[in-house]
Length: 199
Image 1: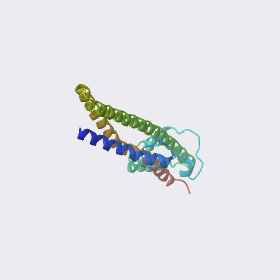
Image 2 (image 1 turned 90 degrees about the horizontal axis):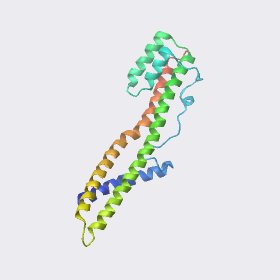
Image 3 (image 1 turned 45 degrees about the vertical axis):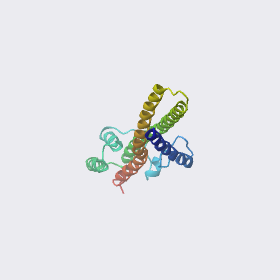
Image 4 (image 1 turned 180 degrees about the vertical axis):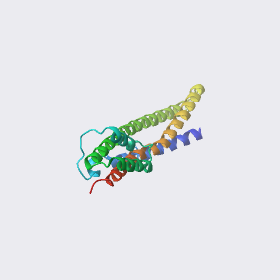
């Protein structure tokens, strides 16, 4: 019993740690230490106009690659250099490539932030379920004729739910870092492309 209660105490502390962060950001659904920020702005990152003309061909391929997280920034810079050397793009083309890559990155970031909020709801619901199970366990255990079959079932349920809760908490650390990494990628992509703007 002590192990179960200690495990739940750790889970409750982890959930409690989320609450001050949610209060600071003004969003009760935000569980991350990283501050929740609003939409990114392409205009802040790019020095000139961003053409609405869709990119095509090699420019479209480059924009798609620049937005992919699995493409390292080193590889992305090499691809930009290769494209610039082969095509000598003008400012409008570079701006269009950045806009396309930025929109892809921003869509990923928006979806991810929505997923983090849903994740927080699931964690809160699981914590409430664990709390109710503990309350039922304590009530049955204190009775004159405890239902030991029910106690065993509750013990198994609590152990399983707490394990899931802890695994999700560990995953949350990585998930919470990703929106910031996407913001940094958008900035890095802008810097790479700006190097080839005509003077």
